[in-house]
Each structure stands twice: as structure tokens, then as C-alpha cells.
Image (cartoon, rainbow, N blue to C red; front, top):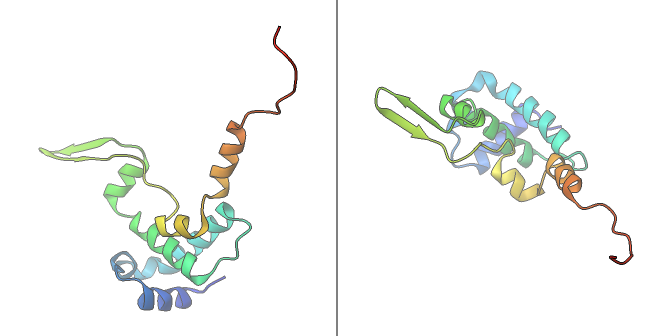
Length: 126
């Protein structure tokens, strides 16, 4: 498993938008640990590389934004003294870059398997 220092070095050398990572240095080790835990559950067959853990850790830290917390809980719109925010959908738990690299997570593949039709048997309609 990648260390926080390895993740930090990868982010510095490879990510342009590091604001979420830089704003919460005290939360970085926890974000790495949470990213590793979630990714090992969502992608049990994949060896977790520094790149994947780094991208997911940034995604976890970006999720601390209060506006994104509302979106994660399926709030459609929010108004405060005439100021409004409307969300189009629920924020994905998997970072888009991770999904692009690793494909669908195990929980989505399991849902698809449940929706698949059962075995088809031969015969004729009467």
C-alpha cells in the first residue's frame, strides 16, 4: 500500500489542481487510508498503485466541501436568503479518473449481474 509521502510526491508531480489536497494537510493520511480501504473493497482484484490511491484520496478530500455533502445525500436544491444551488445528480463515490483507469467497481458489476435474466430454457409456447 502506498504511503502518504508517496501519494503526496505523486500528486505534486502529476496533478495540476491540488487545492483540496493542499488545504487539509492534517487530513491527508486519513484520506489515503480511506481511499485504500474503499478501493480495495470496490476493486478487490486490482493491485493498488500510487496513482489510483492518489486520485481517489484527492476525490475524498474534495468531498469534504459542504456543497458536495448535500449533493452526496441526494439534495436536489438548496436556497439560503435568495441564493440557490441546484444539483443534477448524486456525486459518484469513485473518482472519475479512477473509474476511467479501472472500469466499473465490483458493486456495480454485482448489480448488473442481479439484473441479468436467469437461465433461458428451450421449449415452445402453447
